[in-house]
Image 1 (cartoon, rainbow, N blue to C red):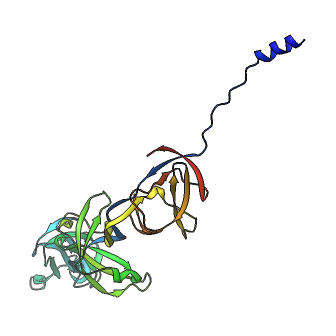
Image 2: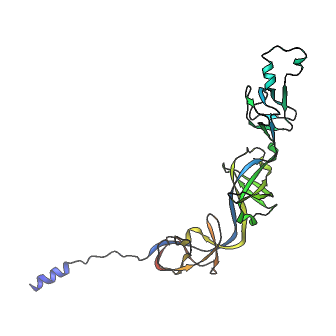
Image 3: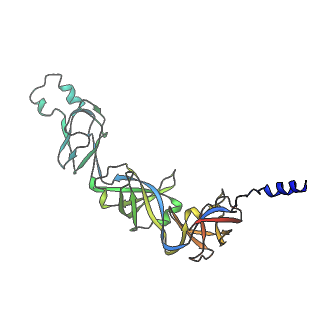
Length: 295
């Protein structure tokens, strides 16, 4: 019996358990120094500053139009021919040669060069005295009208440069030339005029984004934006910093300038050889065991 027991004991093989490496896999990186600029981004609209409005000098009818919407016109070009109500009525009766000297017909001419941006009437339409017939816009007067919340108006500096971003991705350099001396009663915004050499081929009423430099630091200590953690109310920000190869601790930070990919760290002071978790830190406790994926 003893011999059988010894034989069975020697035949047993202990099961080998696989080795388990503790810690959350993370990727780390180091702070760096770079130039960082923060911009104010606000919506704006293209406008023509110089417009000529053609109006009817009397009550009557449009006999003929000589231009179409969008046509380029020059000073002195005839745009409309109008006739008074009396003149239109006289066409249906017989008049003496003396009475026919003036039939109440007049030509409305352009007083400036430009493009017909509005054409409000066609031949046969009735018009009232003083009614707007058309608008001639001068493309050379194209500008951008920026509406700024009044509490931010002190950040807008006259003669400062800015960047104009069009809906198609095209960018233009602009200059803030003046502020309009009034505030919208409802929106409480103040308007600023921006000029750019590249607006001559841009139509009016195009919505675009204006980027104005707000802050800049040429030697900012930055980390990737993915490294920064926060609470739902955005009242606190922190990163996870490695104190050795397998331990990370929470470090509350103060942010400065940031862009789409980088965040400036203004407190506490960081060294360029500090190891910060840039991927895998989400949900880690204040002190966590980690495993380095790669650096």
